[in-house]
Image (cartoon, rainbow, N blue to C red):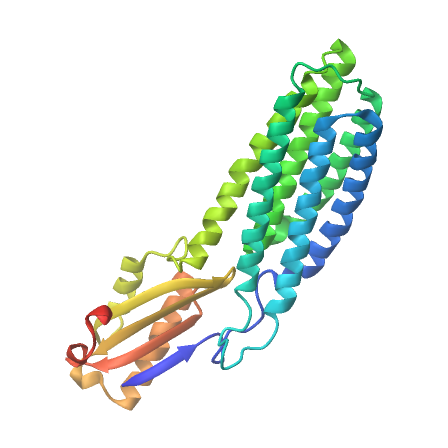
Amino acid sequence: MFGHDHAGHGHGPTGGTATGRHRRRLALVVVITLAGVAVQLVGALLSGSLALLADAGHMLSDAAGVSIALFAAWVATRPATAKRSFGWQRAEVLAALANAAALTAVAIVIFVEAVRRFGQAPDIDTPTMLVAAVAGGAANLACLVILHGGRRESLNVRGAYLEVLGDLLGSAAVVAAAVVILLTGQTAADPIASIAIALMILPRAWSLMREVVDVLLEATPRGVDLDEVRRHILEVDGVADVHDLHAWTITSGVPVCSAHVVLARDSFTAERAHRVLDELLECLGEHFDTEHCTFQLEPEGHVRHESAGHA
């Protein structure tokens, strides 16, 4: 049997992870977000606004999540070893999982506290609340611009982008609540805005959690149709059949694929095997953006020697 593993021009993952390529952006986002958190925390303490405190807490959880992602990106650059053949790249996925869990917890705490505030009429310094909310929104807008370019490449960058987008909407809700209180004196707008922030957080947390679970369960990458992959492999001249076909994701930006490829009898030679491998790698790289592929080339009839799980 002929075996071949391909990743770029080498035999292992190259170029680092998708998150690793955007570490500077993430670091800048952490700094800007923490500055926004400081302004909103001071504003919440001075104004007595729960909505402002909720938005500050959300931003703080985002900063913590991005910090975890940065740490995971650094860990993921550690070289592969005999015990960890893909290195520590999956650490980025675990960071995204922690981020999703933190978002969920923040949303629940905000919702419960907002419900408790209904029926009360706390004194709120509305001008201070409004200024702090606008400052937080400006920080979020700056972070969105910074993260925009990398949101499609990395799970963690996308998670940070979605969180900052939610923060911006949260800041908008606080600004709206401040304006309502300023114009009408209805302090109920504050807990209503807090609940709105909580409800904006939960769907994003669920979406991120679902993507993380797909990676951890080694689900087929989104956008990859295994039946279509099989069809492309079978169209390569010399290929008689394919089985034990798998595609999964190590971490964001690192999709992998493996398959047992059966060659026709007249193609099972060293020279022809090299040509088939080159065509397979070019095909999957071009059509499915999967550069790290492992193929086991087999003669016709060899499948009878394999267990049922490889059929």
